[in-house]
Image (cartoon, rainbow over all chains, first blue to last red; front, side):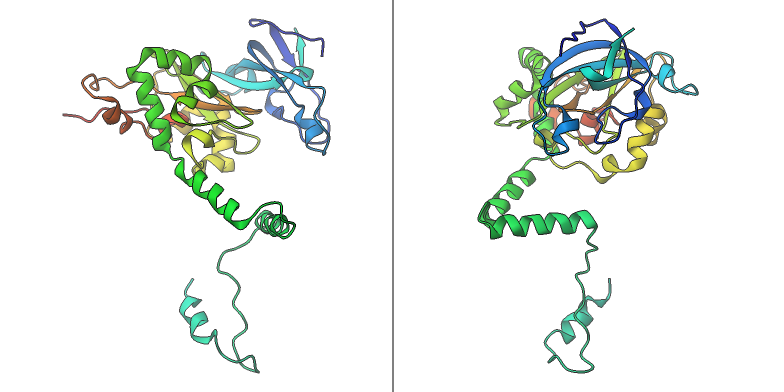
Length: 94
Length: 218
């Protein structure tokens, strides 16, 4: 724990590719977004998936990305966004 | 398949020489279907659940349909205080409809003239089942999951939904324990409709965000 991101904080998703059940989609890894809200703390799905207790719980954040930042060839509008729910240990402050 | 009748004709034949071999179930059982069936049989064998409990749970699941979600949306359209509660804490607000999110959290996202929301789960098929029932098969398809995050406007257009370039398309990838429900905009021309009539305008696709409700032309 220890990391707290308040709404509006600019964050980067860790660019990491560990084995296992990871709920951080590959297409947001290494990308920058903005924390919109903190949803609370939830058991860590990465350890739950291997039969452990998922503790300590991890804070879960709604992070908003600009589509143009996710896809270099994005064809939609510049204002388009994508929200993903990312656990604290995948985020670092920019 | 056409061998159904054939199968029945020969079912009671004594088990000798040229009798047709037993026909497999016409359903194709995938690895995970077989795993599920094996798990179910073991749980019953060990007395952990009864077949009656499983059937009752399936009946309960089947009782939740998009009409449930539509009633919630219509209530939000006609009751501003309820809408506020729904947006602030979806899981709590749907208790007023006798619904419970179980281990997940309902997050309701509101469409406005400036923002259009659409829901996807790229990692699996997370869906607000406790409000809308089972997801449509296209929602679980790899194509919908991969393309909605990458080219949402093209996906929306294929559902017949064209949005102006100055409307922000906001995709929600359900990556964790949150389940998303889109609160669509109440359509123009529906001013004189009551909650029951309004609910008829709200389809499943409107609450996933691939469509928008339309008032009947009159």
